[in-house]
Length: 131
Image 1 (cartoon, one colour):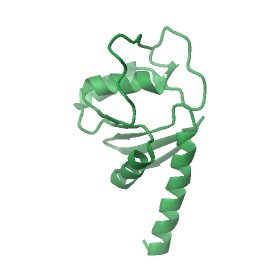
Image 2 (cartoon, helix red, strand yellow):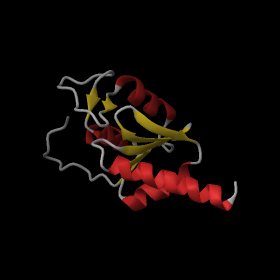
Image 3 (cartoon, one colour):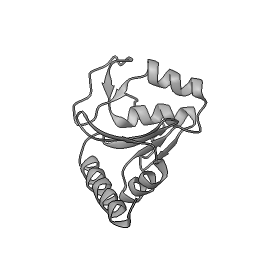
């Protein structure tokens, strides 16, 4: 990749990260298969070179969930049985199950409890109600 192409890619990522920052639920998720930058309702960027975009998202203040260090079966349970993040759309009312949409904080808390690295999203207070 030429330097100009690399700069264009960084600029494109910066634009999408900025859009994700203004979108409720916007975040970067990283797993064994690569990354997904969620930046709007139905809008996402997928890729494999996770470290550069992870660093850019963390620097920009975008929430990041990195589950690469979590046991495969634990991640599979979260993906298959857990709710999904409401990105750019309102969350569903409870009860929440596998096909429901919840706030990012609820999904991040489940991943954090499983051992995932969660950045730029504070841990909820111990006495706060969960989603």
